[in-house]
Image 1 (cartoon, rainbow, N blue to C red):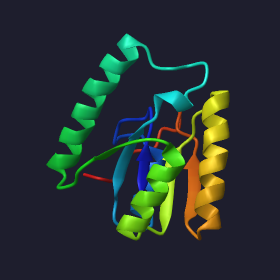
Image 2 (cartoon, helix red, strand yellow; image 1 turned 180 degrees about the vertical axis):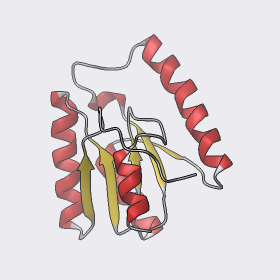
Image 3 (cartoon, rainbow, N blue to C red; image 1 turned 90 degrees about the vertical axis):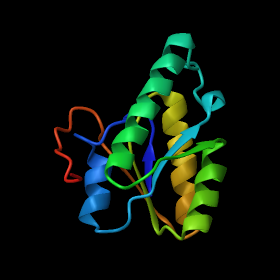
Image 4 (tube, rainbow, N blue to C red; image 1 turned 135 degrees about the vertical axis):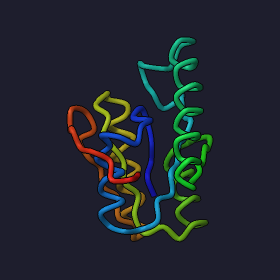
Length: 134
């Protein structure tokens, strides 16, 4: 499972590259959980950007025969539910570095690992990784 966050792109996406390297099915997921953003809740401009970026990502995925699952948070519960429903054995994502996001990621990783799911994050900024998903 590939958990998209602010990195709503297929090119230069280390988590996507790792999913593809594993040769496992790509299950793209975005979780809307603004209450988990701490001191950085999304404002009007951010929500506008998000709406259009998700639409663009969804279109790119559909062109490749895939889809985008969009859920409402809380994130840990949403991911756990999707893992149970899909049978995914791993959840991969690109890191964020805001304090609230780091705390959430630790919680998510802990809960996934406790349930036997591989949880792995990647440096998502400036990684210069080409997407193999063409």
